[in-house]
Length: 104
Image (cartoon, rainbow, N blue to C red; front, side, top):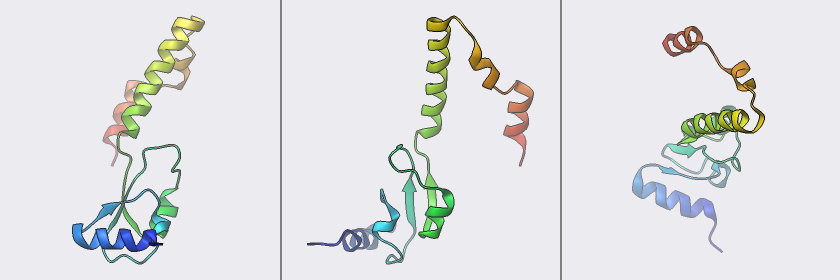
């Protein structure tokens, strides 16, 4: 049986870097950057866990836009089904949004 780490290492050597679903499949056996895409609920790792496994780049893929769409749909459903606006308790006002967007 071929070890997953050996397959990933061989692919990495050819392409320079690659994305894998689980960085512990390769451990520290690679010599080039390891990139991870965090875009599914089934792969929940912290930044600390990923960097301790040698990951050098973390992407959330479409995760942030999906979160925004999910929030929009949940708010619309609340209005339609409950006739309430409770979602407004969880939003930032524009002053806070602009402050967060411009803080360095």
